[in-house]
Length: 344
Image 1 (tube, rainbow, N blue to C red):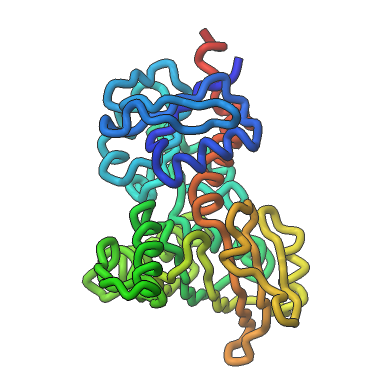
Image 2: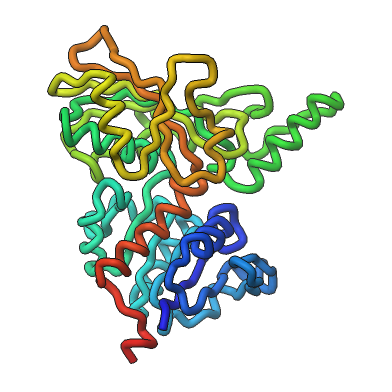
């Protein structure tokens, strides 16, 4: 008897990706249920070679469900995650609602899988921000060897991180440029087609955006609270795939060659780093892939023990859906949960 899995937010970009990845990886699911808001009730979504009819989450009884993979937004997660968890269903939430709660583990399995055991405090596990997920996968193996003191991150984030409407906005604006139609920004404060916007999420009092703060707070929580982090988050006219330019200062000496060797052996990492035209990864090439790709590894002569790296990953997969399912796999593989129907 397999696990009963509910996907909350099954009609969204990440929810559909979760369904695809569950099927791809052969997760031991005896039953998968697709959930969304009432307005999406009755919609069909694909799960492997099956079609699932979406049910309204408000009417669903979670008492016989083992895991809820939630990608329904922060306000929904704030209200519903505790209710679902109280039914004995483990919630793995993709929003920012629970990431900074001291009693909720924030997990990237390649980085801090052992911390998942803390889920029993609230029956909730948080998935990190898409930008942070790929970043810490690349940083963890280097930190273990040379101890990171400070990182400076500039992100180049695709529009899929904002959702389906943002992807449609980029498509429609791009078309409008070529046919000379007027361009009306909607999801973004300025035109995104053939442009970059140094603004992701809302502004905070100190001038940083919430997205930039998330990278700082989540890196410290998962990797090491002593690491100093500063970030500039930029939205770019790319449909899928986040990229990051990362400057790292270490406590101990580390060469670019050593870093390449370390990262080649690290879980979840794939080094594509040739000093030639095209010898690096771009977000377009990362789409549909599970790995965190690292390129342009080079020493920074302006600081002691410094490196620069370029990190690229599919934000809908490693940044969201894949990471959530990897967390669920940790729960199952470590025997931290048992199927309710089998237990009964």
